Image (cartoon, rainbow, N blue to C red; front, side, top):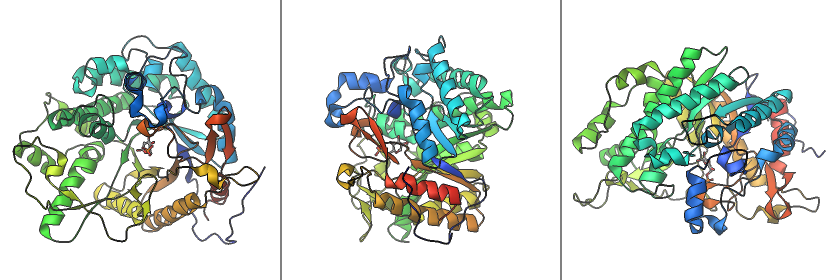
Length: 472
Ligand code: BG6
């Protein structure tokens, strides 16, 4: 087995004992077996069937790294790359093919096997219940627009807690719940490809209701040592300047894209400014009696933070057309900061200090809740060109990316933030929504031309030394 020694002899950045080192994945992106093992279809299977051309190189979710069949090999590689924890998601449509009916025993067996294999390898399973993958049968009745779906979801969550909660202690209701709102109801990059602010608001609201109902089920069960959380992509919102108009623009972007989920999940209530803004424009969602108490009583124990890039905004330069349908961009323009560092493959800015700013905000304004970096990573196209003669991809850019972010995480810990771990997106190169296999993110490369052959990248071996030394 190859090992890469960290060049520094001394540990300069040491992390607290028991720090969670690992990576994150999602069911649709790694499992494959989309029509196998009794799984029902989800919106990705369906959309791909309808519009394969929307997917990079026409590759759909049926062609993934095949974790469904190869989980043992993959878990062995997790061990080889120093993981002490690993996040995956359960596919709702695999567990309950039509979303609300019978439980699929083959799915129960599969997830039991994965959990047991992880534990046998001393890797703690972190389980997320929803990663953009609405069962098709649920979408057909309106998806998150239909309040009944929140009950079906809470039932599914309860079933999972009951079946796996004896061994899984870290649970998450949603990954990046704002993304299906943006993708499916505002900017047309997820099914059902609706562009409608009012419907987007309703979907976001019902997602929060579904989340709170799942948390309520979790708390009722009182799982020993169990923690329930949510995973949010927090994009710190930076104004172009300290001019009041820029500050206001950045405040509104923060309300829409961060606080619309962060506040109800952690504080149990929506920011008043967001309610006022929606009210002023006539876009409040339909609510039901008791919702306020439901949200208030069901806050999370643990917050997962996904961080990739900041959001930079400025005040609108041209007066928006007041008759145009409302979109969040009515309130701000994007701002391109001169000299910013970019990941050209994904078109995202790299700003390492952003991770620190988020963490300090969590400490100061969200009760210093227990949290961890649940995703952070760098997608790169054409990584094969970095493969050396021994067959290893030498992804030094990824090592640098992780290291520079970890330095800021370390700084936040020094300042008292309750950060418990760092998970990379992602474990192995995976299928990624409409981008399919365009950008590679993994510690482990997956060669689609060689039957999904796995090879650990340089970053994977580097990460092992970091995890073993609990620092670098
Ligand atoms: C996160 C998601 O938003 O970013 C993942 O949780 C996703 O599902 C990852 O794959 C990277 O984004 P992308 O679009 O480049 O795959």
